[in-house]
Image 1 (cartoon, helix red, strand yellow):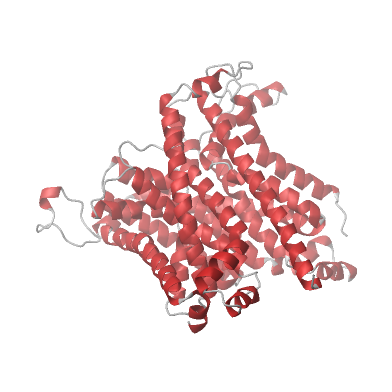
Image 2 (cartoon, rainbow over the protein chains, first blue to last red; image 1 turned 120 degrees about the vertical axis):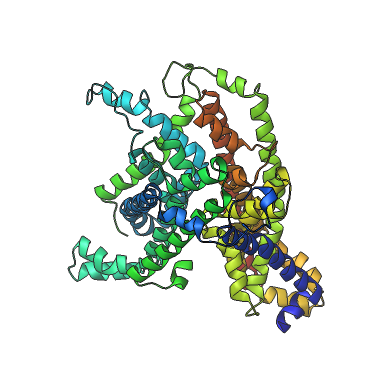
Length: 294
Length: 272
């Protein structure tokens, strides 16, 4: 602390620390505590607040565990989020390798700028773009019919396929950047040594590049999974009535059912799912939280 | 140097086509003369002029811009301060808690951030609307600013600050004459990041808004859900244009500043 006081003066540093800490406490910590508390309360009309019915209860969580439909949607969300994470990993790994180790460093900067622009385009616009492409009389069906592959339009927006496409498209770059960072930190000599010693391309990747980029892969997987599981826009734009996402149920409780207490309980389940997933990935890939945070 | 094999070229090309084709199609369809968003009916620019006559869209854009500028500016100040606290305080009591608070909104699902803020505003009986959106946006964007500024702070030479102090600068002056100018590029790109995040945000805004405050993403979302006119494509293309230009300017700026900084450092080392 003394060093700091010498550097910035006691007034400035106290103001700095206090302002940001207060802000974060009031708008990050307290809201989540409120959310937690809400999830254990009963939804009541205003006149009964504070009355005998105003108690703490597990009822809101029981609503979830007694509803087969909601449990089903919950596990479907996990399943398809994991699938999207896997697809993103398969697509981005070669891309990240080429960007990090094959291209000249001067070219990489340009490529990155080109990659960044789609990331900045709003998620709504990106899922809307897929909505156009995949719609019944949209360009994809027109193209396929034009080359004569199909004779009548395929209904792309049905089931979960359109949601999967949309999610991969929306979050793929969150997988690319951590893996790219991890691979570019690997000494190219190691790859060359492995090749000189006679390892095949696959073996070099399996034994040298992948083990080195494990923290990057882990943080990419964590990011993509959490974004998918918590995604609202993509599922509600691209899903049909038969395919529902867990966040849509939360939204339903909040905006249509108007039972905010059950909604909070469901939100907490989502948060718990994310925490479980993060620890699972860390265990599976044998990395620590510190490595991921980098 | 390793060579580009056919496999590599193919994977790069497919990757870029996959990333860009949907966005390009969206822009092309904004020039669609037909009344449907997805069916092509010839070229026209009529949807662009109808955007500028649509009062609701213009009002929503104005709200979005105001929210963006206000929240990005406050978030930049707070984010820079927390970055300074994280980078310069060393090990103070509660540092882990503090950094957890700074980084939590980065990884938390947006639904949960939005929901928890909504419940906070409700329990405090705050009228929801324009200002609650601004507050929420400040909170979730300041973390991004903190990350950007902190990475710049950790890479700069502290002896410059020490020299200023030794030469009799007050700590206050040192901050404004030495530290701030050096981290300024990071602060500016932090602002731009916060601004674009705020422009794009739908989830948090939709949870924390009240009657009378509709942002552009909320308007687009409801139009997309309730049957759409190609007007939406036009406004989307305009947004894409704004974002593209902003990103280009930001990256050119940081690039130029980096080159200048390297030159200045080389000159300093050479003793001139």
